[in-house]
Image (cartoon, rainbow, N blue to C red):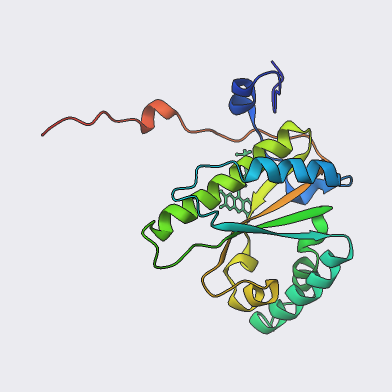
Length: 196
Ligand SMILES: Cc1cc2nc3c(=O)[nH]c(=O)nc-3n(C[C@H](O)[C@H](O)[C@H](O)COP(=O)(O)O)c2cc1C
């Protein structure tokens, strides 16, 4: 069995899935066909109430630079004490990968389906994207970073007040070998409920 991202069976992929790092991602990213396939998988998630409480924002090509200007300007306001190096990181956040996809949690407020459940469905979308991209042989990472928690950036992304980014999905070709990280022991996480 391949150490990481073994696509020989669904179970093999589930057991060996490993994210790539947005810090070490180069072109090419997904082709338009691959992106379309990834999005088809993305929307095939459990969704209580059939509300489709999510949507997507794509950054490719020059849009990453343009949004880099926005992130840099915002970082300057938030951290005027920081120097050129951190400003460069803010500007270059989306330039680390050829393709960046925002998964927006867009819950229906005042609906009988709790907002929490709708947000969980958005997380499932992110996970499906991660698996679909990996199955296609792409590197992918689910990130958030400070931009997900800043109201001004949210506005610049065009998010409505009740919308939040569930994740920024970075796609590309891994430029460094994938490295394992410690995994929790599932047995240690399991308890059997018993009546008291
Ligand atoms: C909601 C969410 C947000 C995350 N944000 C970041 C992030 O901003 N930066 C980062 O390095 N990893 C972030 N991670 C972690 C990576 O997605 C991933 O867990 C890590 O790269 C290891 O991946 P692996 O499970 O494939 O080993 C986030 C994970 C989740 C679920």
